[in-house]
Image (tube, rainbow, N blue to C red; front, side, top):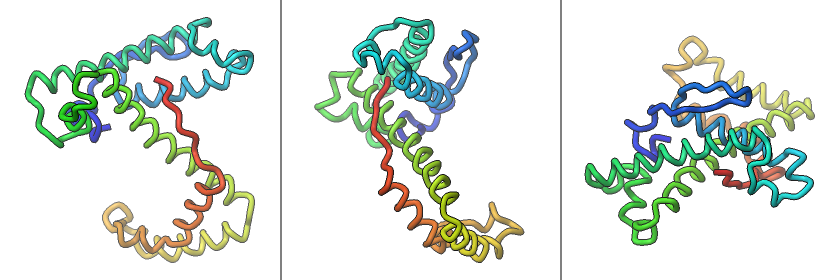
Length: 197
């Protein structure tokens, strides 16, 4: 999220209302994650199956809660845009500053907000979905699981005494079979792009 709004803004807090109606202050990133999850669940509701056009209306309490959370989220990004403009745009420091210097986005804050939120949704949920799919496919084939375990043990075993200190890009590159498995799960079941905000 810091790439989109700037490192100093990624930890701001804003209100979030959970599905039990309980309000709390969460970080921008946490609200984004919860609101995206709510939107996915909302899209899988019976209302969406009866008539997808009904998703444009706030029929249930959960719908109204989702709209409130989305509005709070959009408002927070709108405030960051206003603050960035007021301080002076440091070109290239984050996605918002880049978009504010582009003629296509310059006069349309809603378009900038859409881009920021879509970037987050595309970046976070696709990785989670692909990783979950990878685990499902690995669990279905013991031969693949055995090969993968063998590679992981051989690569990570020697650094297990100080994993956080010794794990780096070179070690990650040695996990070649894991990389192939990840790409294959992505090929079999690519994540669907959505923008629920």
